[in-house]
Length: 196
Image 1 (cartoon, rainbow, N blue to C red):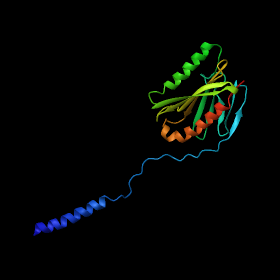
Image 2: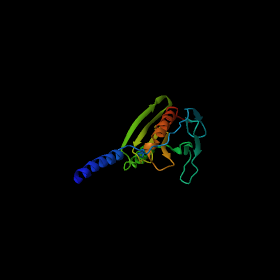
Image 3: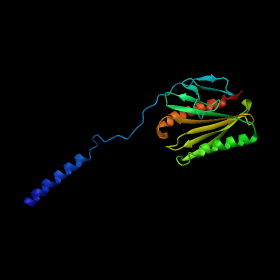
Image 4: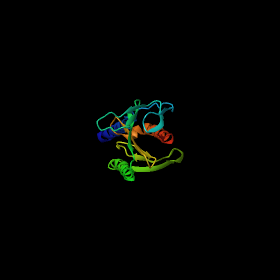
């Protein structure tokens, strides 16, 4: 009889404990990223003594590159709200050999991201009326240092290379809304570009 009583008490107690332990309760939530408020698109004209002109966002500023490694007509389009910048480096084309070397340099800068990239897609653009030809590179990968790079040239006198960087440890999953937003600005810059 005692064995029957023990069994009659034991099973309901175990059943109660199991049912209480299976309730949802306060389970930890998955990690999320902050919502980023993106400004309205509006552009200003960059027309200075530099040998290139374009429109760039009003929520960005242009800062000439005054560092030791900077060259004439180099600069950054700075996005203070996002901690990002598009670094622009300009080279005059003096010979066909110069141009082929600049193309090779641009590809080399993109290919340096291969160890961290999951995919690299290139997209050619041509704006014959402004004499602007080039390539936009989309570098996919969570830890790629630069998600977007491009170059533009007129094939005879001018070569401009650009790369998007952020002042944070790369995590392109969390930055993807901002990268997409700035990609639109880069496309606008390339569509409105012209040479001096």
